[in-house]
Every structure is written in structure tokens, then in C-alpha cells.
Length: 211
Ligand SMILES: [Zn+2]
Image (cartoon, rainbow, N blue to C red; front, side, top):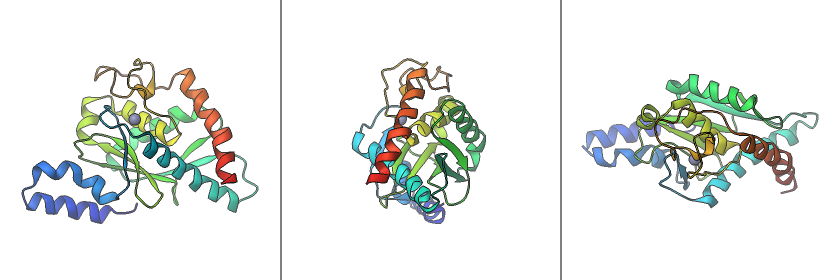
């Protein structure tokens, strides 16, 4: 929702200059100067940035809740306006998470708490912040062809809900991401991941209010 035009113009400029090699880094640079959190396939490890991303989502939600004192359910609103190719996977991953956890709910809508983007990035898919405290998820075309696309999307959405990566985990674990390889088709979080998210949204949101 923030910089679709900027992103397009950077891509066009890169192509025009024949900078195919640097094209991979253009989308994230265009979206913002925030730090990369974690790559689906496991090449980047920045726990701090990952936490900053989650904090941004929680604070956005907390702010809205403070404005509507009567609200009880914790709802996290997302936008798919900049990821039209992945609407099916995003809807499926929201459905997966909504049926897996009780303390937080993902809903598509306006005035989003975070947004999905799509494009080409050599680093693959990741969750990040834009340098202004807003979180976004980037979905890389090539990686979503190599790996199960719903698993990639559900994994990245797991970061929205506060889960860290655990690449050494088995395919039955969603946050093991690309660790188990391209043959892994599981897009469901396991029991531990479900209970961790419920814990985070019970206590994480309360602490966000205090801050
Ligand atoms: Zn990840």
C-alpha cells in the first residue's frame, strides 16, 4: 500500500540500465530502508529486526484497540493490494492460522497493520519493516515456484504473529521454512507453534499497551 509506484519505477530503471544483476535487491530497497529480518531459505539471521517487525504489528494493533475501548477480539488487518498473484495463498494462510490459534485473528481490510508485497528478490521471501515502524511481507516469485507457495506464505505470516525461524526443524514445523527442502508440502503450524502464538498474543499485546 505504501510505495507501489516507487517500486515499479526502480525496477524499470534497473532494467533500462541493464542492471539485471542488481535487480534482485531493488524491491526491498524501494519499499524502505528497514533491515531485513529473515529469509525463508535461511540465509539471513537478524533476530533484532525480526522482533522489530513483530513489535510494529503489535503496536499498530494496540493503537487501534486503544481507540476502540469496547473491542475484545485481537484482530490483525492485512492488505493484499500489492501482492495480487498471491491472494489465494494469503487467504489460505490466514484461514490456516485463524483455525489454529484462538487469541489473534487475521483479517483482510483497509487501514492495515501490515501489507504483503510480491516481486523478484534474490534473497527470497521475508518479513521486514519499512524504516518507519510499519511491517511488510515480501513474497518472491521464484521461491514460491520452487517451494510450496502456501507453506512459504503461512511461514512468513508466522513472523507476523511473532514466531522466529527454526530452519533445523522438520517439515511438520512451519517455521523450519526452507530448511527441510523444496519437497516439504506442509503448510500447517504444529502444536508448539500454535500454543506459542496464543501465548504471545495473550501477553505480548498486554505489554504493548503498557509501552
Ligand atoms: Zn522465516
